[in-house]
Amino acid sequence: MNFKSRFLKPLLLLAGFALAGQMAVAADRLVTGGIVRGTDLPDGSQVFLGIPYAAPPVGDLRWKPPQVVPAWIGVRDATKAPPPCIQHNEGWNEIDAAHGKEDCLYLSIHTPRHDPSDRLPVLLWIHGGSNRAGSGSYVAKDSTLYQRGVVVVALEYRLGVFGFLGSPELTAESPEHASGNYALLDQIAALKWIRDNIVRFGGDPGNVTIAGQSAGAYDVSLLLLSPLARGLFQKAIEESGPLPPPRSLAENEKIGDDFAAVMNAPAADRLKFLRAASAEDELTMGDKLTTPQGIDPSALWMQPQVDGWVLPKTPARIVAEGGEAKAPLIIGDNTQEIAPDLPPDTLRQMIVADFGANAAKAQSLYGLSGTGAPADDPLLGAPGTQLLSDTQFHCPDTRKSDQWLAARLPVWRYRFGVPKPGTKDVRHSAELEYVFNPMPPGANFGQWPPVQRYWANFMKSGNPDGPGLPHWPQMGSKRLYMAFTPAGPRIGADFRGAVCRLLN
Image (tube, rainbow, N blue to C red; front, side):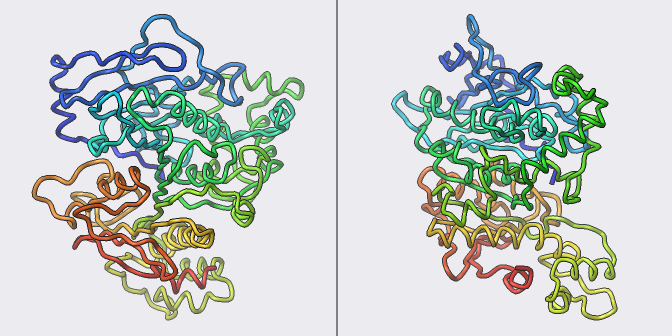
């Protein structure tokens, strides 16, 4: 689930940046804190990189809710990408890890050419990376989505131990008697910044879509449930990011106790010691933490933390009580999200653990009822790929879709099945290439699925349909979904329904 596309290279922008000498300084903008100056591009659009939306969360502000941006004097340069938040190198995020800093609460904006009176739809993109890695500014800097008439905003938010740690001391000092969820508070602070400032960039603060992939989609799910985010956005898109089981405030405080122990913090003034410790040391020791429920440590910071404030109750209870945001939703996943190399006997054991009394029926559906090795499915991949994609993505997304349907909220479901260019499998994050890049001239809807057009239509109107596109119906009681296939968009029904009903 740790991914950030590094090959988003739209030709227009590459040409624009190659002609840097021809670029003019963009008109100054007065925002919270002072004046920022970005860059004009040859197509009339403007890019502003690294605008602070909160005070640097360092020193005494480590593990505190985001604070008001300190004012600056003069014009602040907004022509260079901001630092990613501090993180370890996991291979895919090598560049982010090399440049990461604890002072990282910045957002970046790409606004299309517009008249001063225009009020364009706004996207807030929340990047993925297991909530412990990745960055977002590349979406504002390199994506062509702005060409669809959307103001694109991407933010950096605190990651890992800096964004989600709780502890008894942090809870005690909080006026809300809550700790953890600082990264979600960062995202809410960015939404408030948009509310207060986006008009100056041609955006409509009353037409904001939050969207994310992987951990970013997990966070979108939680923003849909948090009362603190209510009224700050109107629509949501979740790409491959269903929620795992939640943990309580007490369980999160236990992780904080464990962190203090591995940091060798003294019994007295533990919090003072931890706030004074080096960020690099804390980053390293944070990787030694595990969850109370024994969840994969790589997913440690993706569990919803029921802190009583940002997330006042469990996600299931909030939805059951009708406390979710009344927002239209696009939600979906890829056909082969995870591709483990697991022997058949291991898969059979996993099915027993996941499906319980329905294990025998599930084994049959996966071709594992016999003793031999089952054949791969041409669409869904090997049985191990099918099993993990179903249990961790397809079926949880179906449950979320059903909840939205039961609440009588508009929901559009999709299944993405087009490989990245030059590959043959549709893994986790495969859709991002198509969301952020336009269809090349001469390509058809199969070679380059029109997800960017559907997404942009949804951001504008709350409905992905639009002229020249195949009709995409709401999910409805028939559980319809849009299948993006190599042959073009197709409507399907009840994707993996037989498996998911056994799992439920």
